[in-house]
Length: 214
Image (cartoon, rainbow, N blue to C red):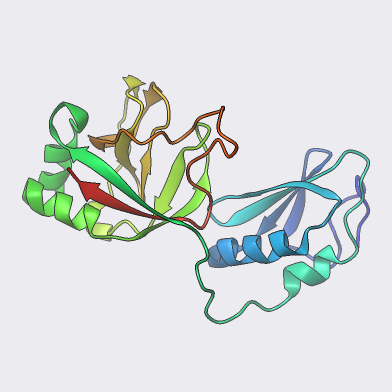
């Protein structure tokens, strides 16, 4: 096992250092299962674990070395079926109109009536793959392939907070107003991020989300 600051751990060719304290581990489709397994290990040397699309970034505490048991934990087999322990959130959404200016275009591109597009979008039980872009912004996977859509060529200068959007193979929710290039299909009043809360982000990796049309 390589020490902090030395190079790439020899036992794990799919690891690489990111800066002085970060180690990126390629996890593929097992990201959330591996994230849960590593969180359960509670390594004191690791300050933070950040899941992404197909990897986990491990952030070491200052001065800490890679824990000797980390390599073993990363290569331990995962159960064939992993029960999703994340919380279930039902989020009310006003689809279309001013709240979702791209909905009719996306429905037409998908070969669907607007109501059918909404029904298909709201029928899925999504999983939070990871958070990013803005604090608390959830990348929700399992969007039906027919609803996938490219991001806008020119991002909007201001997307309202609570906007529900589609970007590539993901759907997501903007926690705060700001620039954005995803396609807007609706809006929710749910507060996705509140720095005053004990847990500022409403959603966590592994949580499940179901949209409920208003």
